Image 1 (cartoon, rainbow, N blue to C red):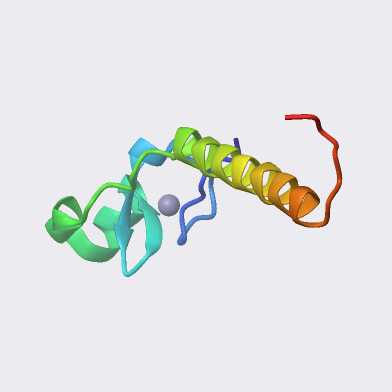
Image 2 (tube, helix red, strand yellow):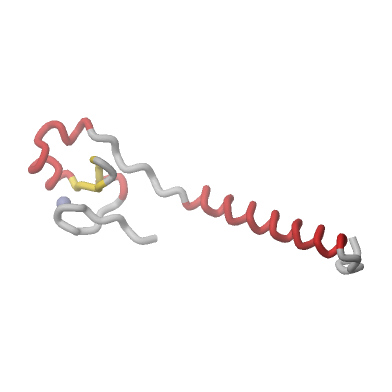
Length: 82
Ligand SMILES: [Zn+2]
């Protein structure tokens, strides 16, 4: 997993150490320097959604296989035999 980087200093941080402002990531040091106390009212960067992505891939795979199976039957192929 690639760590997100701060938009200002370009260092990489854990997602929980960054906050979002207009969809740009800022670390605490840069954020406070740029925005002062306002920085702490910005939303934290959401945790990575690897599990969700995996579910999407699994769904696409299942739909793809199911679609191929249907196509095969429409065109009269007897394989796979179920
Ligand atoms: Zn920074």
